[in-house]
Length: 102
Image 1: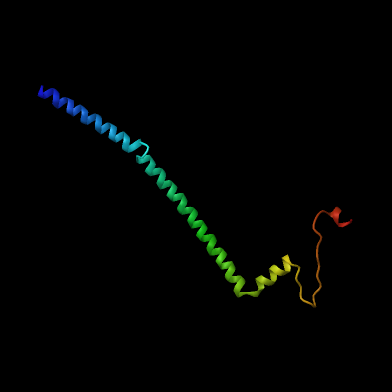
Image 2: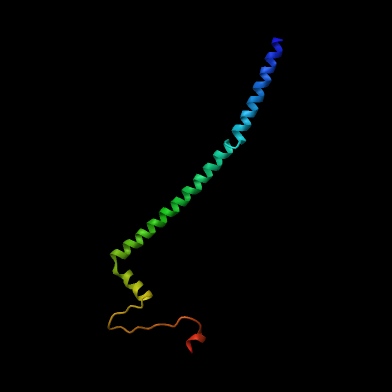
């Protein structure tokens, strides 16, 4: 009888180890989810790095605009058709050549 109880406990422990191993490695909250979270964290870190670089570029552009009047003048000439009083303004028509003749 003692031997039967010992073997049944051994079998129960083996089954428990197998089930816990399955739960740990492939369960819903097991090792697979850990790998998934690590991959998600890596992707988010890459996005954050790209955004940080983008912010640095924008801050550099803002600094250029604040320090150098050339950028303000170039933008005004291009978008606002701004000219100095002694300059002639040349405006090219927008659209097709057919629209130019009308």
